[in-house]
Image 1 (cartoon, helix red, strand yellow):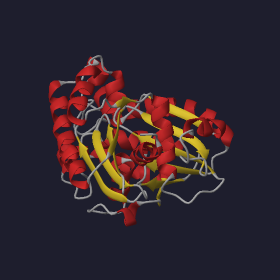
Image 2 (cartoon, rainbow, N blue to C red; image 1 turned 90 degrees about the vertical axis):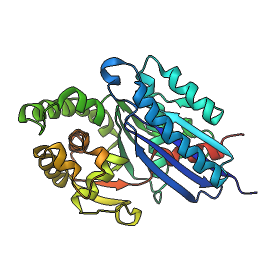
Image 3 (cartoon, rainbow, N blue to C red; image 1 turned 45 degrees about the vertical axis):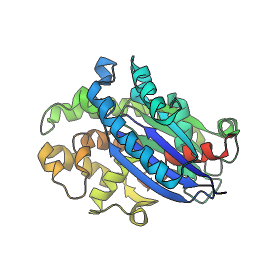
Image 4 (cartoon, one colour; image 1 turned 45 degrees about the horizontal axis):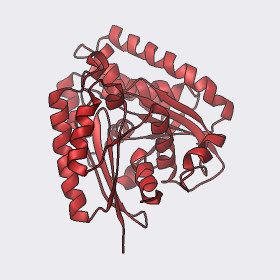
Length: 319
């Protein structure tokens, strides 16, 4: 009998779904901007509206899972939930809907799942690579060997042997709320946000550079959105995006062009999801600063990410 696995990532900015079968074939992949972490950086509270938005999407994901015959779910929550004082309100709602609590990942475990998920979408080699995942509340940066990804239930110990990295408390929602308050973004705000981001990534990259990485991969919504804008892609296509190259100079150009636009101008870009318009400048700042910190001139964008790692982990875990 075919087993069908559902994976849900409840992030600070987006709530996302992946459904696979036991041959690891992708059946469904969906994403919705719910902004679960709205104002959590300052209030440390998950707001009622944010909870309601996210729960509505989770209800639709549950219905999709029922349609495809999902037999087991893997559900995780990340930065916004782990930073909030009322995380129980969210976990209780999820349990009432799915019959299980979501796992609230530490930043480090989020980084591990991100790395292994990214690597699952590539041919494996001994190359040392960096994986960057720009979230709403945090950014995960991990360096390791491509071949060192999820193969067994002991994936975490296997990973720890040859890899390095972790989570940095800077994400596109958090950075927007802290620094980018003008419309369009002022030169002073942009400079302050860039300086802050570059200072954080300089520290992380110094540790990781000891592994001598030769390539950078970026995953998830910010990187994909910026690639689509840069290459004038108006409709999402894995074929056009997965494992394609974005130069550091292109990211820099995107950053300054987007920062000059008003919010309404960004919302009207045919290549950008309207709900991402408010935080895409911060996302570009983080992306540019992270890639620049490693001294490499290009980055590859991947469609495989933490969702893939979570789905595979759920599939191989004991029932």
